[in-house]
Length: 133
Image (tube, rainbow, N blue to C red):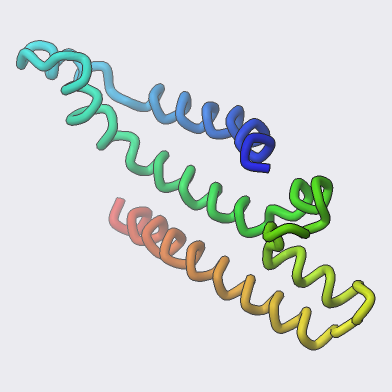
């Protein structure tokens, strides 16, 4: 499941990182080279800190995708054998044999709260930066 999920999202993440790398000012690299930094030092001290917004977006997207990862787990083994996710638990309780709609809805609310705990700090930081700019 991990290999399939990684394969599915690798392209999107690479596009995000390529866009972030295009945003790195070439003069920063030149200044780093003039200061005598090698490639690793340039990456560690110049490029990686510049990619902080991109890293944040990638982290948020990865967490959101992990929380909503339903299709791969359901296709592989319907959530059996220790791979039951919250989304599978919601589905099994709402439309499963037991049809415990209240319990499934409560789990869905927990999933929503977890998602909001990740998304809200990101949005607050983003809007705060926009106001300051």
